[in-house]
Length: 120
Ligand SMILES: Nc1nc2c(c(=O)[nH]1)N=C([C@H](O)[C@H](O)COP(=O)(O)OP(=O)(O)OP(=O)(O)O)CN2
Ligand SMILES: [Zn+2]
Image 1 (cartoon, rainbow, N blue to C red):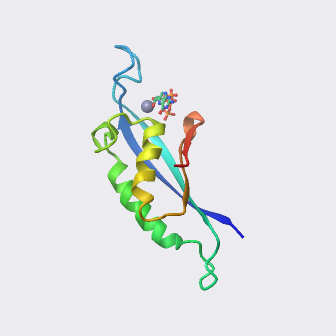
Image 2: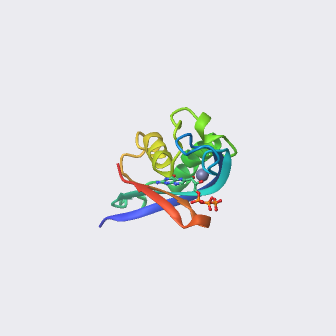
Image 3: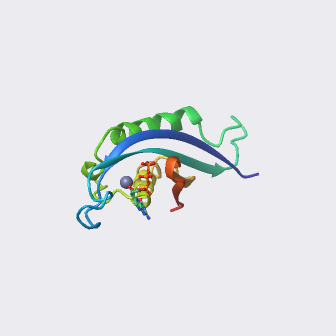
C-alpha cells in the first residue's frame, strides 16, 4: 500500500527580478515569507512502519532552510532567477539524491495565495 509522508518548513528571503520594467515593484529588492512542503511516497518498511524517517527528512530540510533563510535568493548558487518555479526545482535537486522516493516539492507564498509544485 502506497502512502505519502510530508514535511513542511518556512523561510523568509529577499529577491528581485530584472526582467520587470524600471519602477515595477517586482524589479526592486523585496521580501516574502515562503513555506515549502516536501513529500516522499512509498510503501512503509515492514520492519519500521516508516516510508522514510521524518526526523532525518527534517534534518535535510534544515540544511536547505539554512541556505535560503534571510538570504538574497538571487545570490544563492543555482538560484539566479529565484521564481517559485526555480526554488522548487532547486530544492528537488538537493533532496532527490538522498531520497529516491521524493515525489513532490511544493513552495507556497501563502500571503498571496500562490504556489508551485515540482514532481521531477
Ligand atoms: N510564475 C511566477 N510569477 C511570479 C512570481 C513567481 O515566482 N512565479 N513571482 C513574483 C514576485 O515574487 C512578486 O513579488 C510576487 O508579488 P505579489 O504577487 O504581489 O505577491 P505579494 O507581494 O503580495 O506577496 P507578499 O509575500 O504577501 O508580499 C511575481 N510573479
Ligand atoms: Zn517577489
